[in-house]
Image (cartoon, rainbow, N blue to C red; front, side, top):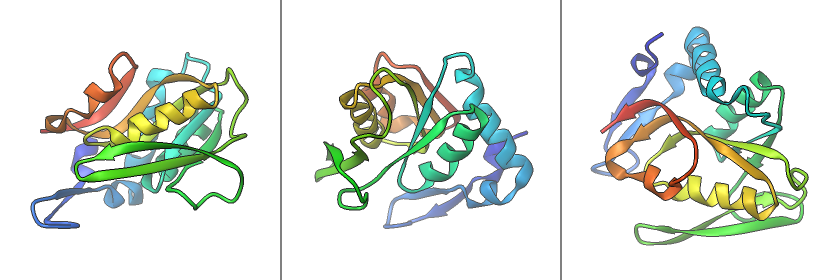
Length: 171
């Protein structure tokens, strides 16, 4: 199935100059969603994944489905102040400023094999910070499984040395 056909481009959203990649048509098509989940999981099927981490918010949707596909648990990563228990935090650089992500401190046991899943990688800051959270908790980062990669933004370079799978490429 051609997954790219189910991605809608929204020009100038959320601000001028941004070409937003809207995955809601893919999510609403049961065959496209099933194919995406299968292809996101497949490269990591033999890696012993015990937990899938997904980032707020579209990473929750795909990550939970991939966790189910891999018979693994799911762990949400959120913006600061959104998780109800003790958390660990990692800050990361934005083009102008800084942001941070948090994970529950007891999200998985030390030594657990963890896969990071998200809908999109652009500059790589969010993916990098999530990987750092996994490592901070003592998890073994198995890799990154991403639906879309905006390759011109070189986010992959921030994750150098890690196993990275991106199903759809946009320049």
